[in-house]
Length: 340
Image 1 (cartoon, helix red, strand yellow):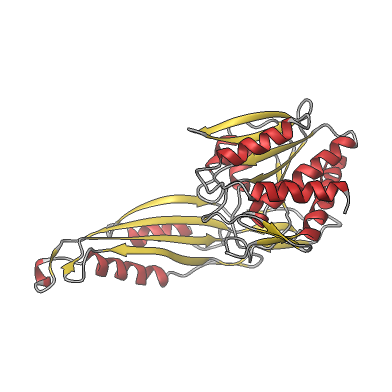
Image 2: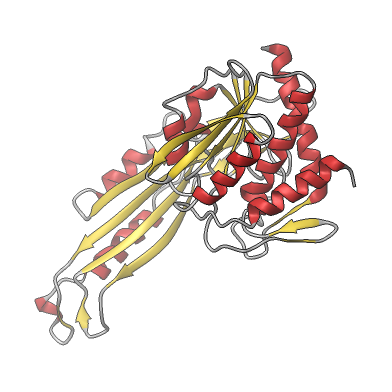
Protein backbone atom coordinates (compact mmCIF):
# COMPACT_ATOMS: atom_id res chain seq x y z
CA UNK A 1 0.00 0.00 0.00
CA UNK A 2 1.39 3.42 -0.96
CA UNK A 3 1.82 6.29 1.48
CA UNK A 4 -0.88 8.25 -0.38
CA UNK A 5 -3.46 5.47 -0.11
CA UNK A 6 -2.60 4.91 3.56
CA UNK A 7 -3.15 8.62 4.23
CA UNK A 8 -6.39 8.53 2.26
CA UNK A 9 -7.84 5.58 4.15
CA UNK A 10 -6.72 6.91 7.55
CA UNK A 11 -8.30 10.30 6.91
CA UNK A 12 -11.56 8.70 5.79
CA UNK A 13 -11.67 6.48 8.88
CA UNK A 14 -10.81 9.39 11.19
CA UNK A 15 -13.63 11.48 9.72
CA UNK A 16 -16.19 8.66 9.95
CA UNK A 17 -15.26 8.15 13.60
CA UNK A 18 -16.28 11.70 14.51
CA UNK A 19 -20.07 12.02 14.92
CA UNK A 20 -21.46 14.84 12.78
CA UNK A 21 -25.22 14.41 12.44
CA UNK A 22 -26.65 17.59 10.92
CA UNK A 23 -26.60 20.34 13.53
CA UNK A 24 -23.69 18.82 15.43
CA UNK A 25 -20.86 19.08 12.92
CA UNK A 26 -18.45 21.29 14.91
CA UNK A 27 -16.09 18.54 16.13
CA UNK A 28 -15.67 17.05 12.66
CA UNK A 29 -15.18 20.48 11.08
CA UNK A 30 -12.60 21.41 13.71
CA UNK A 31 -10.69 18.18 13.11
CA UNK A 32 -10.54 18.72 9.35
CA UNK A 33 -9.66 22.41 9.69
CA UNK A 34 -6.72 21.50 11.92
CA UNK A 35 -5.71 18.68 9.57
CA UNK A 36 -5.54 21.09 6.63
CA UNK A 37 -3.81 23.88 8.57
CA UNK A 38 -1.08 21.41 9.60
CA UNK A 39 -0.45 20.81 5.89
CA UNK A 40 0.04 24.50 5.11
CA UNK A 41 -3.43 25.25 3.81
CA UNK A 42 -4.84 28.66 4.64
CA UNK A 43 -8.04 27.77 6.47
CA UNK A 44 -11.06 29.97 7.04
CA UNK A 45 -13.95 28.96 9.26
CA UNK A 46 -17.06 30.44 7.65
CA UNK A 47 -19.86 30.90 10.22
CA UNK A 48 -23.26 29.38 9.49
CA UNK A 49 -25.05 29.72 12.83
CA UNK A 50 -24.20 29.38 16.52
CA UNK A 51 -21.39 26.86 16.88
CA UNK A 52 -21.54 25.70 13.24
CA UNK A 53 -19.22 26.64 10.42
CA UNK A 54 -18.04 25.67 6.96
CA UNK A 55 -14.38 25.19 6.08
CA UNK A 56 -12.72 27.02 3.18
CA UNK A 57 -9.08 26.10 2.54
CA UNK A 58 -6.85 27.60 -0.13
CA UNK A 59 -3.18 28.08 -0.93
CA UNK A 60 -2.51 31.42 -2.61
CA UNK A 61 -4.60 34.07 -4.27
CA UNK A 62 -7.92 33.55 -5.96
CA UNK A 63 -8.86 29.90 -6.58
CA UNK A 64 -9.91 28.84 -10.04
CA UNK A 65 -11.35 25.41 -9.16
CA UNK A 66 -12.97 24.47 -5.84
CA UNK A 67 -13.49 20.88 -4.66
CA UNK A 68 -16.41 20.64 -2.25
CA UNK A 69 -18.60 18.22 -0.31
CA UNK A 70 -20.46 18.08 3.02
CA UNK A 71 -19.39 16.79 6.43
CA UNK A 72 -22.80 16.34 8.05
CA UNK A 73 -24.54 12.97 8.09
CA UNK A 74 -27.98 11.56 8.70
CA UNK A 75 -28.65 9.84 12.05
CA UNK A 76 -27.60 7.60 13.64
CA UNK A 77 -23.87 7.61 14.25
CA UNK A 78 -22.10 4.40 13.18
CA UNK A 79 -18.38 4.22 13.90
CA UNK A 80 -15.84 3.17 11.31
CA UNK A 81 -14.49 -0.27 10.62
CA UNK A 82 -12.48 -1.46 7.64
CA UNK A 83 -11.21 -4.52 5.90
CA UNK A 84 -9.01 -5.05 2.87
CA UNK A 85 -11.80 -4.03 0.49
CA UNK A 86 -13.83 -1.24 2.08
CA UNK A 87 -14.41 1.31 4.82
CA UNK A 88 -17.74 1.08 6.66
CA UNK A 89 -19.68 3.46 8.86
CA UNK A 90 -21.93 6.49 8.78
CA UNK A 91 -20.62 8.91 6.19
CA UNK A 92 -18.23 6.41 4.62
CA UNK A 93 -19.63 7.20 1.18
CA UNK A 94 -21.92 10.14 2.02
CA UNK A 95 -19.69 12.03 2.16
CA UNK A 96 -16.63 11.71 4.42
CA UNK A 97 -14.81 9.27 2.14
CA UNK A 98 -15.38 11.82 -0.60
CA UNK A 99 -13.93 14.60 1.57
CA UNK A 100 -10.82 12.49 2.17
CA UNK A 101 -10.40 11.81 -1.55
CA UNK A 102 -10.74 15.52 -2.33
CA UNK A 103 -8.12 16.47 0.27
CA UNK A 104 -5.62 13.94 -1.12
CA UNK A 105 -6.33 15.01 -4.70
CA UNK A 106 -5.87 18.67 -3.81
CA UNK A 107 -2.58 17.97 -2.03
CA UNK A 108 -1.35 16.11 -5.09
CA UNK A 109 -2.25 19.07 -7.33
CA UNK A 110 -0.45 21.47 -5.02
CA UNK A 111 2.69 19.33 -5.24
CA UNK A 112 2.40 19.69 -9.01
CA UNK A 113 2.51 23.47 -8.56
CA UNK A 114 -1.23 24.17 -8.99
CA UNK A 115 -1.90 26.69 -6.22
CA UNK A 116 -5.25 27.86 -7.56
CA UNK A 117 -7.23 24.85 -6.31
CA UNK A 118 -9.26 25.22 -3.10
CA UNK A 119 -11.44 23.11 -0.80
CA UNK A 120 -14.88 23.86 0.63
CA UNK A 121 -16.45 21.59 3.24
CA UNK A 122 -20.02 22.29 4.25
CA UNK A 123 -22.53 21.63 7.01
CA UNK A 124 -26.27 21.10 6.67
CA UNK A 125 -26.55 19.36 3.31
CA UNK A 126 -28.69 16.54 4.63
CA UNK A 127 -31.51 18.91 5.65
CA UNK A 128 -31.82 22.39 4.15
CA UNK A 129 -28.34 23.14 2.74
CA UNK A 130 -27.95 26.05 5.14
CA UNK A 131 -24.16 25.70 5.00
CA UNK A 132 -24.17 25.99 1.23
CA UNK A 133 -26.56 28.92 1.28
CA UNK A 134 -24.32 30.73 3.76
CA UNK A 135 -21.23 30.02 1.64
CA UNK A 136 -22.98 31.32 -1.45
CA UNK A 137 -23.06 34.79 0.08
CA UNK A 138 -19.25 34.95 0.14
CA UNK A 139 -17.91 33.33 -3.07
CA UNK A 140 -14.16 33.49 -3.74
CA UNK A 141 -14.47 34.27 -7.45
CA UNK A 142 -13.80 30.70 -8.58
CA UNK A 143 -14.60 29.61 -12.14
CA UNK A 144 -15.53 25.98 -11.44
CA UNK A 145 -17.05 24.02 -8.57
CA UNK A 146 -16.59 20.25 -8.31
CA UNK A 147 -19.12 18.94 -5.82
CA UNK A 148 -18.74 15.49 -4.32
CA UNK A 149 -21.59 13.01 -3.77
CA UNK A 150 -21.67 9.20 -4.13
CA UNK A 151 -22.07 8.74 -7.91
CA UNK A 152 -19.94 5.60 -8.43
CA UNK A 153 -17.29 7.98 -9.78
CA UNK A 154 -19.48 8.98 -12.72
CA UNK A 155 -19.65 12.61 -13.82
CA UNK A 156 -23.30 13.52 -13.31
CA UNK A 157 -25.11 15.49 -16.01
CA UNK A 158 -28.42 15.90 -14.21
CA UNK A 159 -29.89 15.83 -10.69
CA UNK A 160 -33.49 16.01 -9.55
CA UNK A 161 -34.71 18.80 -7.32
CA UNK A 162 -36.60 18.73 -4.04
CA UNK A 163 -39.93 20.20 -3.02
CA UNK A 164 -40.68 19.56 0.65
CA UNK A 165 -44.04 20.61 2.05
CA UNK A 166 -45.13 20.20 5.68
CA UNK A 167 -48.88 20.00 6.35
CA UNK A 168 -50.79 20.91 9.51
CA UNK A 169 -54.49 20.09 9.66
CA UNK A 170 -56.85 21.43 12.33
CA UNK A 171 -59.91 19.55 13.54
CA UNK A 172 -62.09 19.61 16.62
CA UNK A 173 -61.61 17.20 19.51
CA UNK A 174 -64.58 15.28 20.87
CA UNK A 175 -65.47 12.00 22.53
CA UNK A 176 -65.34 9.26 19.91
CA UNK A 177 -68.79 8.02 20.96
CA UNK A 178 -70.21 11.29 19.62
CA UNK A 179 -68.30 11.98 16.41
CA UNK A 180 -70.91 14.49 15.29
CA UNK A 181 -69.59 16.83 17.99
CA UNK A 182 -66.07 16.85 16.59
CA UNK A 183 -64.16 17.11 13.34
CA UNK A 184 -61.45 14.56 12.65
CA UNK A 185 -58.18 16.17 11.60
CA UNK A 186 -56.86 12.74 10.66
CA UNK A 187 -59.70 12.07 8.24
CA UNK A 188 -59.24 15.52 6.67
CA UNK A 189 -55.51 14.79 6.29
CA UNK A 190 -56.20 11.40 4.70
CA UNK A 191 -58.51 13.06 2.16
CA UNK A 192 -55.82 15.62 1.32
CA UNK A 193 -53.13 12.96 0.97
CA UNK A 194 -55.40 10.88 -1.26
CA UNK A 195 -55.71 13.87 -3.60
CA UNK A 196 -51.97 14.54 -3.42
CA UNK A 197 -51.29 10.95 -4.50
CA UNK A 198 -53.51 11.49 -7.54
CA UNK A 199 -51.58 14.54 -8.70
CA UNK A 200 -50.13 14.04 -12.19
CA UNK A 201 -46.35 13.93 -11.78
CA UNK A 202 -44.22 15.30 -14.64
CA UNK A 203 -41.66 13.15 -16.43
CA UNK A 204 -38.34 14.37 -17.84
CA UNK A 205 -36.80 12.53 -20.78
CA UNK A 206 -33.35 12.46 -19.17
CA UNK A 207 -34.02 12.50 -15.41
CA UNK A 208 -37.15 10.35 -15.39
CA UNK A 209 -40.34 10.92 -13.36
CA UNK A 210 -41.00 13.27 -10.50
CA UNK A 211 -41.68 11.12 -7.42
CA UNK A 212 -43.53 11.60 -4.14
CA UNK A 213 -42.69 10.36 -0.66
CA UNK A 214 -45.15 10.86 2.19
CA UNK A 215 -42.41 10.78 4.78
CA UNK A 216 -44.26 11.21 8.07
CA UNK A 217 -47.84 11.18 9.30
CA UNK A 218 -48.95 11.97 12.85
CA UNK A 219 -52.10 13.04 14.65
CA UNK A 220 -54.53 12.46 17.44
CA UNK A 221 -53.89 11.44 21.02
CA UNK A 222 -56.00 8.34 21.74
CA UNK A 223 -58.25 5.84 19.99
CA UNK A 224 -61.35 7.11 21.79
CA UNK A 225 -60.78 10.79 21.00
CA UNK A 226 -61.72 12.52 17.75
CA UNK A 227 -58.33 13.94 16.70
CA UNK A 228 -58.02 17.68 16.84
CA UNK A 229 -54.87 17.95 14.73
CA UNK A 230 -52.78 15.98 12.28
CA UNK A 231 -49.50 16.49 10.45
CA UNK A 232 -47.65 15.14 7.42
CA UNK A 233 -44.38 15.81 5.63
CA UNK A 234 -44.29 15.47 1.85
CA UNK A 235 -41.18 15.33 -0.30
CA UNK A 236 -41.26 15.45 -4.07
CA UNK A 237 -38.16 14.68 -6.14
CA UNK A 238 -38.78 17.16 -8.92
CA UNK A 239 -37.68 17.43 -12.54
CA UNK A 240 -37.13 20.53 -14.69
CA UNK A 241 -40.27 22.35 -15.88
CA UNK A 242 -41.83 20.63 -18.86
CA UNK A 243 -43.04 22.44 -21.99
CA UNK A 244 -46.73 23.30 -22.08
CA UNK A 245 -47.35 22.02 -18.54
CA UNK A 246 -48.41 24.08 -15.51
CA UNK A 247 -45.98 24.97 -12.76
CA UNK A 248 -45.74 21.93 -10.49
CA UNK A 249 -45.29 23.74 -7.16
CA UNK A 250 -48.22 26.00 -8.01
CA UNK A 251 -50.34 22.92 -8.63
CA UNK A 252 -49.42 21.44 -5.24
CA UNK A 253 -50.20 24.69 -3.45
CA UNK A 254 -53.51 25.05 -5.28
CA UNK A 255 -54.53 21.59 -4.09
CA UNK A 256 -53.67 22.45 -0.47
CA UNK A 257 -55.01 25.99 -0.35
CA UNK A 258 -57.92 26.43 2.03
CA UNK A 259 -57.78 22.81 3.23
CA UNK A 260 -54.88 23.00 5.69
CA UNK A 261 -51.98 25.10 6.86
CA UNK A 262 -48.79 24.26 4.98
CA UNK A 263 -45.18 25.37 4.75
CA UNK A 264 -42.85 24.96 1.81
CA UNK A 265 -39.74 23.99 3.76
CA UNK A 266 -37.45 23.49 0.77
CA UNK A 267 -37.74 24.16 -2.94
CA UNK A 268 -34.52 23.27 -4.74
CA UNK A 269 -34.50 23.12 -8.51
CA UNK A 270 -33.35 20.22 -10.63
CA UNK A 271 -29.98 20.86 -12.28
CA UNK A 272 -28.52 19.97 -15.65
CA UNK A 273 -24.74 19.88 -16.01
CA UNK A 274 -22.43 19.38 -18.94
CA UNK A 275 -20.74 16.29 -20.30
CA UNK A 276 -16.96 16.20 -20.68
CA UNK A 277 -14.91 14.05 -23.01
CA UNK A 278 -13.16 11.18 -21.28
CA UNK A 279 -15.45 10.98 -18.23
CA UNK A 280 -18.18 8.38 -17.77
CA UNK A 281 -21.51 10.12 -17.18
CA UNK A 282 -24.81 9.43 -15.46
CA UNK A 283 -27.88 11.02 -13.85
CA UNK A 284 -29.09 10.82 -10.24
CA UNK A 285 -32.44 11.20 -8.52
CA UNK A 286 -31.10 12.88 -5.39
CA UNK A 287 -30.49 16.56 -4.68
CA UNK A 288 -27.19 18.18 -3.73
CA UNK A 289 -25.71 21.46 -2.50
CA UNK A 290 -25.02 22.46 -6.10
CA UNK A 291 -28.16 24.62 -6.60
CA UNK A 292 -27.30 26.53 -3.42
CA UNK A 293 -23.71 27.25 -4.56
CA UNK A 294 -24.50 29.09 -7.78
CA UNK A 295 -21.97 31.86 -7.06
CA UNK A 296 -19.04 29.43 -6.77
CA UNK A 297 -18.64 28.69 -10.47
CA UNK A 298 -19.86 26.30 -13.13
CA UNK A 299 -20.84 23.07 -11.34
CA UNK A 300 -19.69 19.51 -11.81
CA UNK A 301 -20.70 16.54 -9.67
CA UNK A 302 -18.76 13.32 -9.05
CA UNK A 303 -17.70 11.06 -6.22
CA UNK A 304 -16.90 7.52 -5.06
CA UNK A 305 -19.45 5.20 -3.49
CA UNK A 306 -23.05 4.30 -4.24
CA UNK A 307 -26.11 6.25 -3.15
CA UNK A 308 -27.83 2.87 -2.74
CA UNK A 309 -25.91 2.21 0.48
CA UNK A 310 -25.87 5.79 1.77
CA UNK A 311 -28.19 6.40 4.75
CA UNK A 312 -28.27 2.67 5.55
CA UNK A 313 -26.92 0.71 8.50
CA UNK A 314 -24.41 -0.97 6.17
CA UNK A 315 -23.02 2.17 4.49
CA UNK A 316 -19.58 1.65 2.97
CA UNK A 317 -17.20 2.80 0.27
CA UNK A 318 -14.73 0.57 -1.53
CA UNK A 319 -11.10 1.50 -1.09
CA UNK A 320 -10.44 1.00 -4.81
CA UNK A 321 -13.14 3.59 -5.57
CA UNK A 322 -11.58 6.06 -3.15
CA UNK A 323 -8.21 5.71 -4.87
CA UNK A 324 -9.82 6.05 -8.29
CA UNK A 325 -11.64 9.16 -7.06
CA UNK A 326 -8.39 10.92 -6.12
CA UNK A 327 -7.16 10.34 -9.68
CA UNK A 328 -10.45 11.47 -11.21
CA UNK A 329 -10.67 14.63 -9.11
CA UNK A 330 -7.11 15.57 -10.00
CA UNK A 331 -7.73 14.84 -13.68
CA UNK A 332 -10.93 16.86 -13.70
CA UNK A 333 -9.21 19.85 -12.07
CA UNK A 334 -6.44 19.72 -14.67
CA UNK A 335 -9.02 19.43 -17.48
CA UNK A 336 -10.96 22.48 -16.26
CA UNK A 337 -7.86 24.59 -15.68
CA UNK A 338 -6.68 23.85 -19.19
CA UNK A 339 -9.84 25.33 -20.69
CA UNK A 340 -10.39 28.18 -18.22
